[in-house]
Length: 198
Image (cartoon, rainbow, N blue to C red; front, side, top):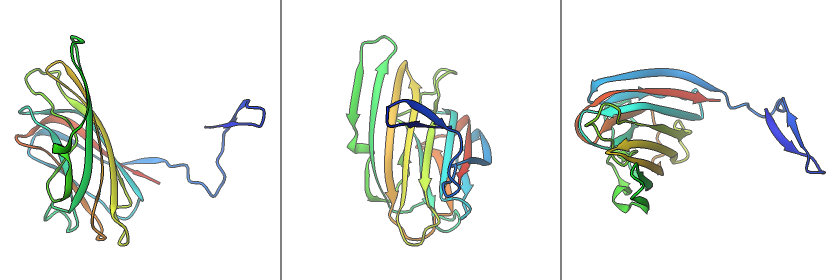
């Protein structure tokens, strides 16, 4: 249901969209559950203009950051040229530390490394984990670069950490696979869901 303000600023509901406007439905394509997994990979096709990955309770085997990269050759290589930016906020449980920082050390400028999605997920306690999402726009385009945006939260050593990441893969080749992994060690547990948005 959409909301609309009329001329008198009263609020009314629009219950149906015009036929020419897509409703943006999310369709679950696949789901993978980590179990001491070194990597988790997904194939993409040209069925959707937007893909959304959702990360649920990602728990690493060692304290590390969760990352991703793209492939243009069906997953043989994950080294697509990328430019991205990264900033994060932090707040500890004791209410003694807060932070909002642009983090140039997690940026890439025409790099080919894996893009950092989390500030750093701790593994020491069973309840420490990270969750969030990643949107990838029009990966099948052979005309434009491929934009992405992500927001992820994790708990590490009593700190809430909120990471904001965005950028683009600088290729006009179709992106047909995405891979996730920790910077080192395995993804001990967690779920990644892939959705297509029409």
